[in-house]
Image (cartoon, rainbow over the protein chains, first blue to last red):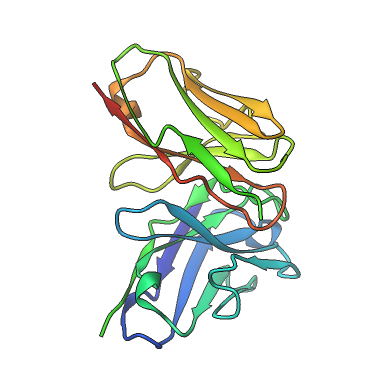
Length: 120
Length: 107
C-alpha cells in the first residue's frame, strides 16, 4: 500500500525557513517522480515543484522559484522541500504527491498534508 | 506560461443529472490533462489522466474527453457522494498548473 507522510510544518515568522519532509513507503521510491502541491485556506490547488525519480530533473512554479528547493534522498525514501524567505501568502497545507512513473507529472497518490502558517 | 481555466466555477445539480465541467488551456497541450476530485476536508484523488483514461477504481459514471485546448469531465448520473471540488491539471511541460477548481453541489 502506497503511503506518503508529510512532516515539518508549523508556525513560522515572516522571513523564516522550514524543511518539509515526505516519508514514502509501499513502492520503489526511486522509480517515481514526486511533487509538492499546496492549498491555502479555502483556496484551490497550487502546484509548486516536481523532481524526477533520479533527482536529476527539477521544476518550480514561478511563485516559489529561488525561495523553495525540492530534493530527495532515495536511500531514505524521503522527499524534501526547503522553504525559505516565507511570506504570509505561503500559509497553506503542503501536500506531497507521487507521479505514475519517473518523469510523468500528474499525481496518483497524495499525502495528508502538513500545515505551514506564516505569521508574526 | 499556459493558463488553465475551468468553467463553471460552481455548479448545483440534482441527483441523477448529467454534469459536465470544462477545462480550457490557453495553448495546446495534446492530451496531457488530468482531473482530480477533492471532497470537503479530504485529499485530492486522481480521477482521469491522459484526458480520457479512467484511473483504476474510479466509477464508470466519470468520463473525460478532449485534446488540444478544450477538455471536459462528465458525470453521467450525479450521486450524492460526488459532492466535491474538481480540478484539471496540465502535465505536458512545466509549470504543471492546476485549474482554479469547480465546486459541485447537490441541488
